[in-house]
Length: 129
Image (tube, rainbow, N blue to C red):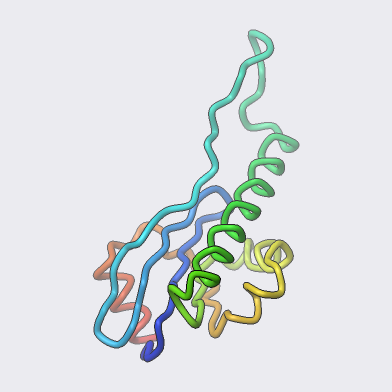
């Protein structure tokens, strides 16, 4: 998949962090990260850091932060298009939390977890996708 216009590539995990890359013709570079700060104020000796409500609240917070970051970058004309790489199980949830302004700029969704790939590996994967 050649990227011919200024594009932000979003590589998200299952709902807590994403790496952002800028791509345009031969350029491909890391430009930032969006993640949920999982600092937890323990209210009891046995507070559960991984309870379902806590995990869901963090996913929603992450999607909100990601959407805001993308809106800002698009408004600043840092890119014309978006490519989103997200694990298949998180694809629908991510799409549900993006505003129309952001969603309409998505030209491709790659339903795969590519979060652990290096910048070089990611670029090669996308070029061959």
